[in-house]
Image (cartoon, rainbow, N blue to C red; front, top):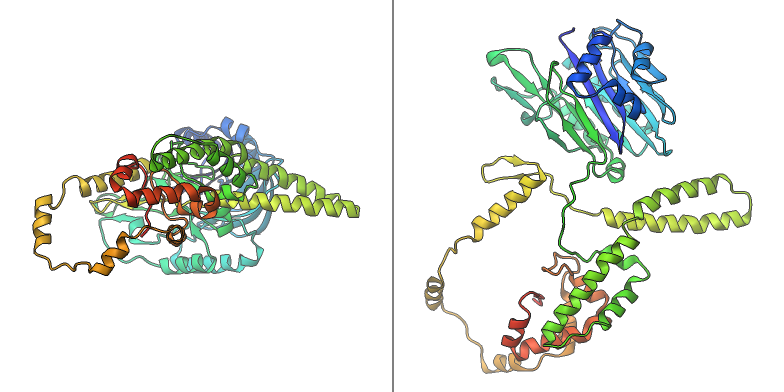
Length: 494
């Protein structure tokens, strides 16, 4: 077995694992099977679930024979030259792979999956000679006019990007990283988040010469990240070989977790939303103070929208795929003016679904934070605990006791209200002032504990105006009464 071996990359599309690659200068089929066992990937798994595979093979066996043993009927091969090992791409119907450009250090492809979706994937092996590596990056930049907007750029770059990508007992400068960083910038590529082991390559040197580096990674275009926002690279342990396998999962959704209710702005795009709010709000009647009645009225649409959301919006993504396929079939069989009219109406419906899908995907995501010990935290549970601990420490013990605060205030020279200012403050609040205050609030700023943003009141003011104005007037008339009944709801009129 050679001293330099790259073991598999897998890309997971839903429940399928359609892509797999490793590189080796000399090994046998028996060694291949042994390696698969160590990485918990069996040939049976690849046969049953695989559609597209890239793998680098030795000269011991014909590539087609080895691919056949892995269960693939089609292949593309680049023969071994010098330090580079054989590269081969294998796939099975209904997957289709078009080789756009290839060299001894990368294969650039157009891929069509079983659903007919198109994308470009470039599998890279960075030149092992530092002086030649920049030429590979320049050649890749020349492909910019031959790529699909959805572009994945992945595998072994043979290059660290920063000092954090390297573990060594001998500190020194990072060589040639600026060339790759410039190429990534020129191509407008976005790094895909990675988790697991921090490094993907480990030297066989001993003692103070021991080195580990992160050489394997993935980048995606903006369109790729928009299409597969849950893409995640998992770096698996390095076993037997000098490289560890990496797994790219494009559907790595976070584990389900109950979240507090939030009024989603996308709901307002539905034609039934306004009527639903009007009916729910006006059919809710509760005895008690104005503040208590408003609190109860805000709880009613919350429960209604939880149910309505599941029936009207949760199926948008699935509907999107079905409608796009119907539109494709419709466009392929246009033969009359009636067909053209139908196609136009259907396309408008698909564009409306796309708009809803875009609103659903607008989510801020925290992928890492630095804790109090200046360490980066990446796991979702650890990030949550980090925030909780921070605010617990912040508010656990008051910095100043109440008596200390009063003593400090007593020593301050505070301005006092004159008679005119006092009279103005004591005048009854007007409906116009309440409306003005509502409209001056930031529409989509973080809401209170009820999950309803200011935009809700602004958009549906004609429905909620009476209850809001009654509550606010009661608050100014009898602060004590409203404070007792309305402790769970605060509206900021600053």
